[in-house]
Length: 385
Image 1 (cartoon, one colour):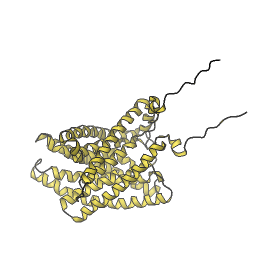
Image 2 (cartoon, one colour):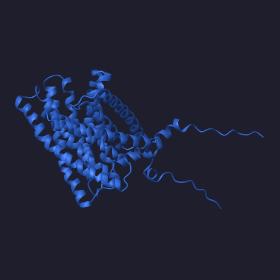
Image 3 (cartoon, one colour):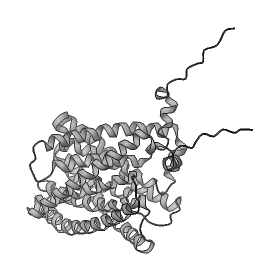
């Protein structure tokens, strides 16, 4: 009697359905890893210290962030194409929707890095073109998110209490404000340059006022409601983002204004950078100490790795670039050492978060569904009679 050979299933790695299934739970919070990687490069290039090989290392890290961005954009496109139900659920989830601001900031951080360090490898014309595309896309998305996510929070979300994650949608325009001046030398002189500078200043104000509205809610939640859940505790570092980024933006305006604006305004931007930046950085250091103490407490109580650990990177990086700008304009050695110390913290945090993320990717834990990610795969059972 003839026997039939069992048919061989197609390899899982080459099955489109399986590839799409692997990104079902890939949320917008993954863009935080791109932001955290890009800021290591951008902040390192501006350090007020000469370290042999540092710029080359920063350029390599920027190239890594660009590769991560392209990979993640592709994966998120698959997510939206094959799992629209899950994508809509993310938008209607008040714990996930604010992370759409990370898409804007990832585009902006990688784009700005192309002019800061990427031009060393890809050339200035390509760097300008890349930054122009990413800055435009990131700014448009950031402004849209700054309106859309608060709208969803008001109309559709049912929120019990404030968290630092609320800051993500409104801080994105501040990143545009800080990185937009990089494009000014590559625009036609006159109206084009002045318009971009004033637009960046307007986005600075937009983001700053929105942040000032939300920070009291976040602090009030901590005082009245107690510590955040363990896994969410690192999100306290997100408060550093608008503080450091606004200081960075103020210093960028001071660098760009001379020659573009009339003398009184140009001088005003220089004075504003110092008068605004120093007290804001002072508060940033206070918050860094408070958030650090809360993280140590949570760690002692059993806090394990989660993607919220990436909050230790980009927000701290903005404080590095803010301290660098203040050191450049004030000429104070203390500010230089502050920038260096914060950068060492940033690199260590990036290495730790990156190591755990790579491990979670290879194990599949970070891409599993919420239930499986916490409890692991269910055991196979067999019914007997």
